[in-house]
Length: 135
Image (cartoon, rainbow, N blue to C red; front, side):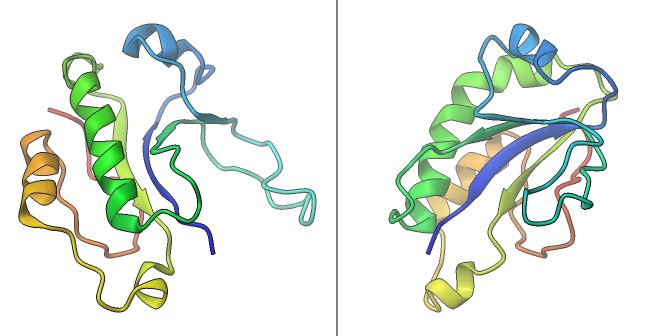
């Protein structure tokens, strides 16, 4: 089973690759509004542009390891994220099956505090990424 924990910037109309320059780093993935989600369902289209940064850990790594690695990457990007125009939105995404994969899943306080120090609240509500701007 694959694990997915990622950070996404969205809420903009320009090419997502332009954020590479603003953030000083290339994304791990880019979504383009209107592109197909998958070959299996070509009629399903993306509804927004996204700049995505992931942990890039192996699919066998635990969700905790993914969160820890992503936190490390986001700490390095913190000054650039704070400098983004307030119109950009961003948030942390996690796979919908994290509890099924590991029913005893938890994040230690130091990881949660690390995200909180960057302005993120980790809730696992599965209602979407949008936690507002970085301001």
